[in-house]
Amino acid sequence: MPLRTVAVLLTERPLAFEFGVLAEVFGIDRTADGVPPFEFRVCAERPGEPLPMDNGVSLTVPFGLDGLRGADVVAVSSTQAKTFSEPVLEAVRQAHAAGATILATCSGGFVLAEAGLLDGRTATCHWYHAAEFAERYPATTVDATVLFVEDGTILTSAGTAASIDACLHLVRREFGADVATRIARRMVVPPQRDGGQRQFVEQPIPTIAAESLEPLLTWMMEHLEEDLPVRELARHAHLSERTFARRFLAETGTTPAKWIASQRLHHACRLLERTDLPIEQVALRSGFGTAALLRDHFARNVGVPPADYRRNFRCSDDTATIPDTATIPDTADTPEAS
Image 1 (tube, rainbow, N blue to C red):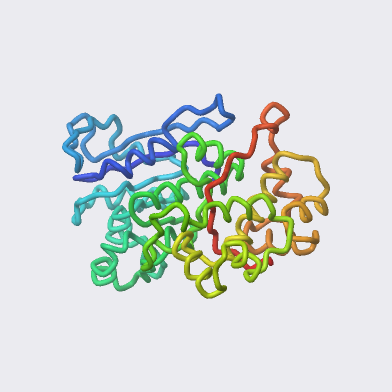
Image 2: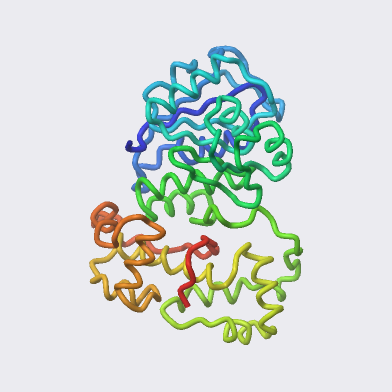
């Protein structure tokens, strides 16, 4: 089902931040930037009545629960509530039965679980709520270590900023990396953090600029076509391999090999979208080396061959020259590539 209509469901005591994320990604007209338009509906059980949010601001929601009908995506926004009316639960069940993709941001997953949609599935939520979630819904496998989980047509995300990652994942899945990157650029956020990245790490991130790996990460982005073994990266950072590995995990939430593989895949996607380079050249420039290895990574991580991806997401001539300004690291949990 194409992503054209996005219906946001607000329950009692919704959280402003996650609603703002949904509105920022799907509710703003970015057609001037080459982003397809979305029909954006905000729905609640009692439309037209003030709905207080967690920050003291009240919204007057224009659509009732019938606004979920026919939506391609139903996004259940985060909430402070833990009990939900049967009409709300039934509306979500019907949307799922009709084939809509169901997205829950943070505690919005409680709505899906209460509706029975997460029985037998794996889901995530903010780590703070994970123990309660697992206790209340034992039929759901809760993974509180990741940013988001996609299980069939249901997508659950961890709290706050992870909602951005889940939304951009949906955009990337439907329209390609370039469209997702354009939205991310306007939001000034990383264009891609994979769902498998950790929600948080135990080690503190360095607070002194000189200790940060950011210069090295930028250098790695500029040399993806080269061999990037850990020993050489550690040498560049003037660290032992063990210390480098710990520091890298603390700053990015993933390993060097997985980070590199993810960046290479992302760069390959952008080359396929923006250039007419042969597949062999795309493989070389993105660091995969051979077309066979590139096809293998696409099969495992994208689900289609590179040629099919290019046909689906090729940029038009008037947008293909937009510069690549994605300098914030993406940390997808893809197979090792170096």
